[in-house]
Image (cartoon, rainbow, N blue to C red; front, side, top):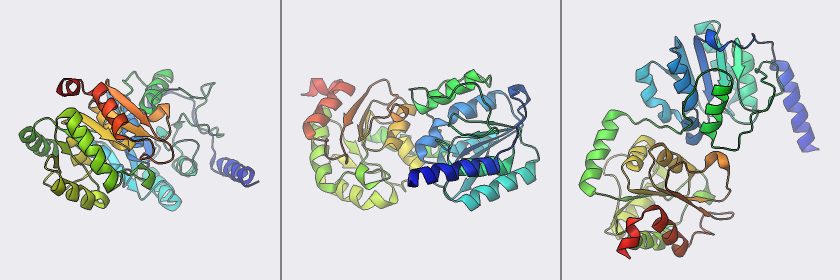
Length: 348
């Protein structure tokens, strides 16, 4: 009953905010907005849309981000892309207020791309308030406001590839389907200098956005020792503010474990991934950054989803169950590292 009521509520919301768009004419797009106030991976996945619209030299492009994924778009500001943020996608008031503000400032907007996911309420609110001439998404909305190309977009591939395929199908352009996270030059240079002095290293991420994606201190000690013995490389731990204490303690306890000496941030972590010899992570955000820079990757997944798997040429997935630690043994980790970092086989 609860599911039925939710579906009915969603349908009523769609009908309330629905409207009739113009016919689909991609060559008339001059002003465009992409709605993506989601996670880091979602933000990295929409770069095919951004690149396609930039290639068309649109007059104005805006990305609506969350505070969490806004750094993913930092370098775009210097390219003339406007980046707006809302606290989170479920902050419906902020989403609606921003849509009204953009329409008031820019008048009629040609295209709105909803990248919030599978027919979300924030997408309905934003599209209904913005009232762009055309709307595009791969989600299953029941709204005539979205262009209907005859069949739902359900590609069994990574999320950037889905966007790339959709863009090509609708005539917006042909771009590579890949994750991107451009790094500001000053951060890239600072991290590169430090990484060059350290030499080849393993980027060893311990934490994710949820408890079941985090590795405990006790487990980390056993795993890091295994990785160091397997690869012969030092380990570098990136961290968010919540993980700083654990990372610093481990770096003090193990001589082969390091942390970046400056303040850590998502962009610093991205640069540390970029210059790593191999990357390990129980969280997909770091995995996607490794995919963006094609770094050999070992990822731990509790659910295997084609949308979020590693795209790096060399990668291995360790499948766990309800918590990343449950299927993560030193033996499985050593085997995975041997397959993605061939030099380790010569060390043993």
